[in-house]
Image 1 (cartoon, helix red, strand yellow):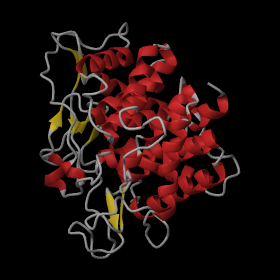
Image 2 (cartoon, helix red, strand yellow; image 1 turned 90 degrees about the vertical axis):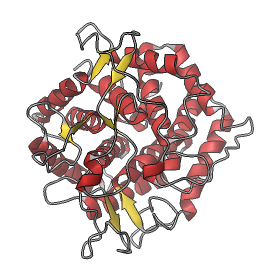
Image 3 (tube, one colour; image 1 turned 120 degrees about the vertical axis):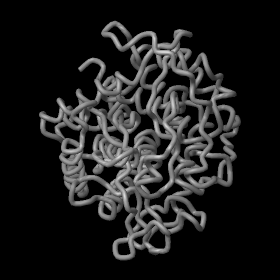
Length: 400
């Protein structure tokens, strides 16, 4: 893999480094792929275990490319993580599996039966870029170009932020989740297909706009913002959601690092995105649970009854902090924060009686809500949100 593409294929690649069917439902209604597995913890993390390989092999044993789920962002996230493991291990079956999944949706002529009317529906577009790079098959370029062209007419807020979805219930809204669904795809698409001027500028613009409306004085981000102020959760004065939900913040953190890795040194928004990341990192350090190394579901209210530490966002933060230090975006002391998080996540993975991995403490797909809503979300085992984030984290930190 050439170094230029590796830079665009996100931080995790350099370190080595819901989507839904047409007519997407609300975020809270995204179908969760698979049933939470029964945990039978017979083995705890040890130095000899390659947890990336163990988790990937366990997931492939549980699902075929035909049964892993539809065109969706949780599956896309997981398979991106699997690709990172492929890059390190060169296990061809990992790439073959990814290709077989994508080929369910993309025909030989590059037709893909998706409307791309939500940012969620675009995340798995990263797999199209990967497969074009790996195979050279034009079908993947044609399919990826459909997402790129959809952005030309995709609705935006007054200052250019992509709406989370085009449905009336998501109109005029920016969700922290959304930037990860589209901006890494954009910069990777730009590098692969010679569209960097648009892709870099658009990705940086989105992170800037979202950061403007979502980042709080404590460095963390609100889950969402409603420009229209009509959503039931929107503050009447600010339009912001009431809480700082951990995975929404994690999505933003990973996207910021991925895009910074792709931007040229002199890009006019580079300093702004670095500043957002540094402010966020300080907020992460302050709110990390000292007992577990993980972060709470509602991040700034760890002392509140019922709050609990969550695995997927902790993986995301560990990756972003580690990669941020590696690339010089963050002060070196954040390495220790990332390592504590990495250790905290490893205490959430184990081998069951069947010899397969179980990763616990993952919140399922989540809408925007209040404190009670977030802490009452199901704590799943082996949910793809957590599996994908784990692999991205693991491939960044396992050798550090």
